[in-house]
Every structure is written in structure tokens, then in C-alpha cells.
Image 1: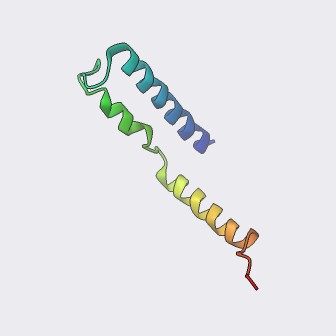
Image 2: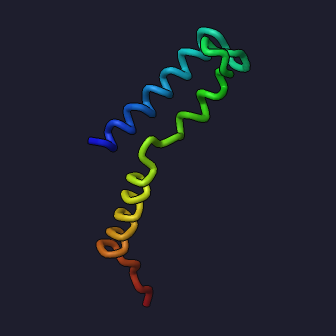
Length: 73
């Protein structure tokens, strides 16, 4: 559930950036007097970085167990 929320926030930020650049352009100040380009930096920002790190670690650990490297003859 938290992961899905984080993904939805990232999707909203992507859409918001696209709309803002289409409407007012790049390199200008937005409605809150912040550069529109600063929105692009927020797209990759994760609200729950610890959750994403744990997910990556679990995926890596599982891949080592489920898919061990094959030994070549």
C-alpha cells in the first residue's frame, strides 16, 4: 500500500511537470515563484526511500537464491 502511494505520487509529479512545461514553458518561474525545472528533480524523489531500499535488497537476495549463477564446464 505504501509502495503504491509512492508510485502514485511519482506519477502525479511526472504529469504535473508535463502540464506545467506545456502551459508556461521551461526555465520560468511557476505559480509559487519556483523554477518549473525544479519539478523535474522531484520526479525521482522517493517519499519512502527505506522501503525502496528494502525492496531492492530482498529482490537481490531472492535472485541469488532462486537464480544462482550457472557454473561453466
